[in-house]
Length: 465
Image (cartoon, rainbow, N blue to C red; front, side, top):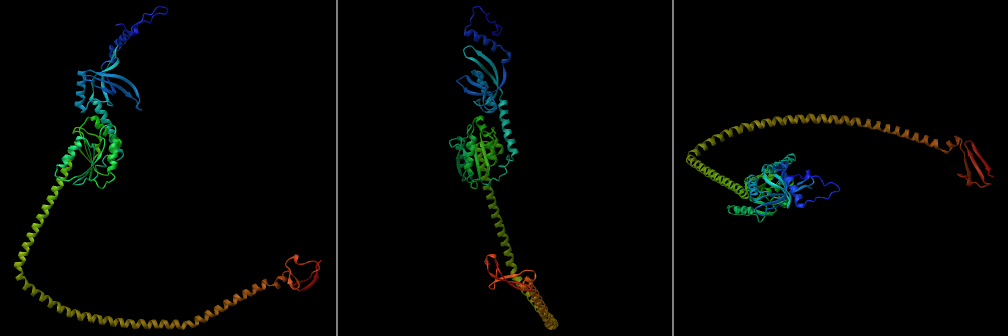
């Protein structure tokens, strides 16, 4: 076939030999469909807009960057027989069928049709990639919880031996919830349970379960445990439980959390961090019922033990009472004789002790009287000496006080003499008087005033001008 890229363009100045669009697209198809490097290539892509008009599959394959923006897109197609084989293979390995939003590894071959354009034909799928991608995400979440010290926090809580007060987080209309409630109701035990409805499918699952946990924890002391249950479904639905925020919230819950999500083969992050993991909702009910059965059996065993102990103790005491009844008539005379002998010995001992105590007390009284006489004489002598010394001490104190007062009077006399008017005049000052009154300001002396000036050695009269 002639290559589209080998055709020479029409020389300039000549009449073009035009192709029909069909011819042109056939040339494109020939180039793409015959290219060996575009056939049977393993490609990682996200499946989108999946449509399965039986028996074929049509979809879009896309690639997104780290911002979630689509950077590549192509139509995907898989024909009936091949698509059934692909779905069967994927279901056997993962328990689900390919669905929008999944990141898959597909075997693709480029195909171009003049009528339908470019597409990628899906011929095979590698389920291990999908399982590995989910496992990688699960391990990243567990590693984050390990770093935060939350991985085993809920497991370390103490679950009540007989958990009867159960907070249930589930969908009200889910079959798993109905099976769980029926099994508990038919167990013969009384459970005090309350449903906190939540969405357990799709992208809203984490936020819905977290909101339900918030409501449960409004009364954390009331509940023995929290149960999160969801019946079987596709593994893709269960992937919504592999969420870091949800896992962190469950790990920090102050109430033991028991989970029963999916089937026995399914395992989510919540299974790794919850206090107890059961394979299904009915297995959770069986777990709680079993704990009540164990508690009941233990209570019955303890009751039997108490009854047996009481019976044995009663029989032993009854036997001892019979022995006492048989030996009591013989024991009474011997016991009376023994007590008489003890009384006689006590009487004799009491007499000796009385005489000894009386003698000791008499000696102690004599010693106390002698010591008192000596102490009184010594005290009186000391008091007499102190009384004899008092007059001398009083005379000395009076003389000392008189001298002190004389010194104070002399000091005041000297101070008065130093600040007296006479002493001031001797230091060179004078006193001016008008009509016998001292003048303190020039304003008090109008011209012609008769003034009298006093010095230390006399007085002078003069008139002002």
